[in-house]
Image (cartoon, rainbow over all chains, first blue to last red; front, side, top):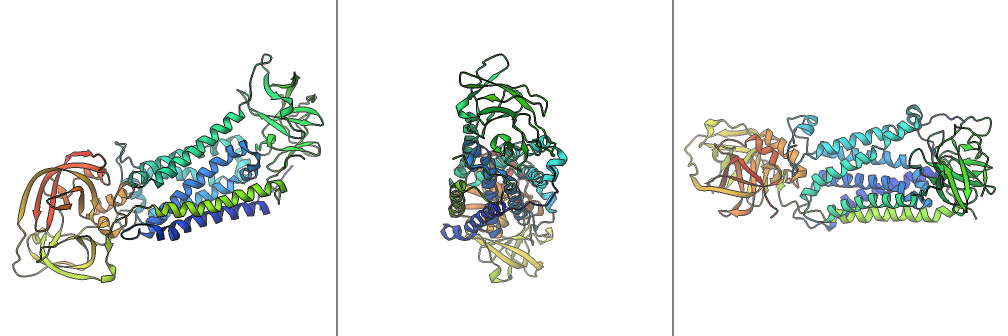
Length: 343
Length: 243
C-alpha cells in the first residue's frame, strides 16, 4: 500500500471535527472576553490584554485536558474512537491557542520596556531558590516548546520519517507538557486568585485526566492467571464478538489483538505496520483485519496484507481451554502463519 | 447487528455513532460558552487604578525630593510619584532635591495616590524658594504587605499586582519606576508607602525576588508631607501569612 503526502487529507468527518473544535474555542474566548465581563464585580474593568491572557491560557489548559482525556475515554467507551483518530488536529489547535496566550503575555507584560522582550522573559524573574514565588514563566515556556514540537510533527510525513515507535515516544511528551502547564498555573495565576474559580478548574482538569486514565487502565487489565508456563489468560472466548477483537496487554512486549472470524480465533500484533494504528480497535472486513486509522488490511491467519500489498505484522499462538482464550505472548516473525483456533 | 466501525479517512460517521457524537459536540459547545462566561465572571477585582489619558497632559508645580525616588510635593499637601514613559523612571538631577519644579505628563490615580508619567519637557526646575516638606521619623516597623511597581499598581495595568504580574513589575522596577509597599493594614493612616533601601536610596536588587508576594519587611518609616516612605532592610524580608 502506498500514499502520497498532503498537508491534510480532508474528509467531511475531519472538517466537521475541526469545525466543532474551532467553534468551541471561539465560544470560550468570546464568552470569556465579551460575556463574562458583563457579570464581573469590579471597580474598573481588567485590561483587555490581561483578560486575553486568562482566556487563551485557560482555553489551552482545557484543550490539553481534552486531548489527554480522549484516549482513555475511547478505551472506556468505543463510541468515542472517532474523536481519537483526529486527535492530531486537536493538538495543533491547542498549540495555536497557547501561541495566542504567549503573544498576549509578550505584548503586554514584556512590552514598553528598554529590556528586550525575550531577555525579560527569562531574566526578569529569577527567584529559583524559593517555592513560593518560584518563576512560573519558564515552566510555561517549556510546555509551549513541547507543544510546538508536537504540532510541527503532527503529520504523516514525520510519522513515516521518524518511524512510528520514535514518533509515538516523542508525542508521549504531551504528558510532560501537561505537568508543566499545571505547575505553570499553580505557581502563577493560582497564587493570586482570591476566588475558587481557577482552583476548581485546575483540580477538575487534573481529576479528569488522572481519573479517566485510572478507569481505563483498570478495564484494560486482563486477568493474567498463568494457565501454563509462559501463556496468559486473555479472558473468556465469549468476550470476543464475531469480526471484532479484544486487546491484551502482556506484562512484557507489545499489545496483542485477538480476533474472532468465522467462528475461529487469531492473534496479531495490535500495531498496524503503517502508522502503529490500533488494529484491535478495527474489525474484519472482507475477511481481513482492517485498521481503523487508514484502512490497512491483514489476513488474520498470517498477518500479511492481501496481494499485491506487502505489509506484515507479527502473529501469536492461541489455545482455548474451558471456554477461555490462552495467549502465548511471544510474537512470531511478521507474516508467520498460525492456524486459527476454533472458538 | 454488529457494532459500528469508523475508519479514520471515512467521509461519514456510521449512523449509530452520529447521535452520541452529535450530543458530545453539543455538550462541548455549550460547556465552552458556559465555562468561559463563569470563569470570567469570577475574575477578581483589579482595583480602581486608572491611566488618565482622557484628561490629557497636565503641568504641576511643586517641590521635588529625589530619594529614594523622584516625588513632586504639591503646595496643597498632595504628592505625585514621578515615572517616565513605559517601564522607565525619571532621571532626576540630584541638584533638584528640595527645589521648586514643574512636571508635565499624564496622570495615573488610584484612590488618593497619584502618579505622573512625565513627558517632554519633563521635570524642569523653576526659580524661587519653595518649602520642602519636613521629614518626620515614625520609627522602625515590621510591616506585612506586597512590593509592587508603583506605575502598574496605580493603573498602568489592571491588575498590576501579584505573582502573575511579577516579571512585568520587575522590568518596571529595573527601569526605575518607583516601588510601592502595599501594606495589609494601615500604618499611620496609610496603606501605600514609597519603598526604598535602608540607606535612603533606591530599592535593593535582592528584593526583586520578593515582588508580588505577601511578605513582611522591616525598616524605618518617615513621613514627608502626605507621603510615607519605607526605608527597608532587604535582609529582613520574610514570607508573610495570608491576611
